[in-house]
Amino acid sequence: MKSHAAKSNLRALRLAVLSALAVCGMAVTMNVQAANSVSTNATATVLTPIAITKQSDLIFGRFSAGASGGTVILDNVGGRTKSSTVILASGITPAAAAFTVTGEVDATYTISLPATVTITGAGPDMVVSALTPSIALSAGLLTLGTQSFTFGGTLTSADGATQTAGAYTGAFNVSVDYN
Image (cartoon, rainbow, N blue to C red; front, side):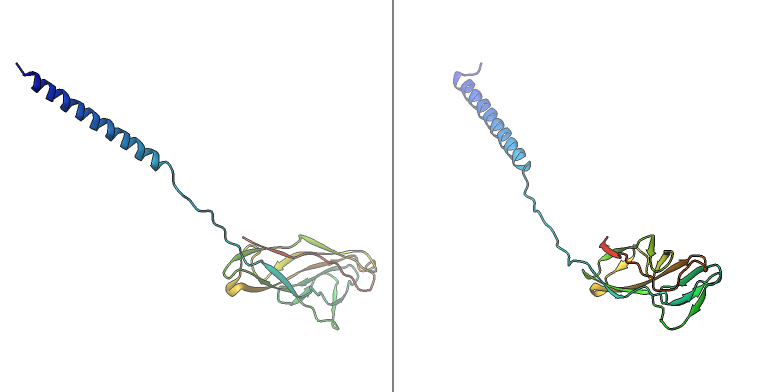
């Protein structure tokens, strides 16, 4: 038989072990709660504003619609051809539209052009279509913060008998935006 003192010591030891386990459990619980909180940062990066500057207008030059009209095709470097009965003339040098884009160094951007442009003047309206840029519309790259591009298009003239002689013009927007 164990003595009363031995039993008392055993009980005290058990109580000490249970107390130690309880304290460890609270420490684990406190550590778990502390791990549920973490600090984070809010960040933002402001880019240099993107800008576009016109260097030259889209100029189809002088022509006659001929007997049945047709098209004047201006490529993106200013070369000009025709179709149907159109007769190309000298006197005004054709030019592709030219632009310079500036902004954040090495940023990419997209060019937005209209599908068609109506130009008006003394007679029936004419339509400019197939605007063809020198770079892909979604592939602009601001190497060193700048890039230039040009574009041409196709001008369709009405029937030669109804296309009145005179100057024709039409304004349209060319825009750029960061990708």
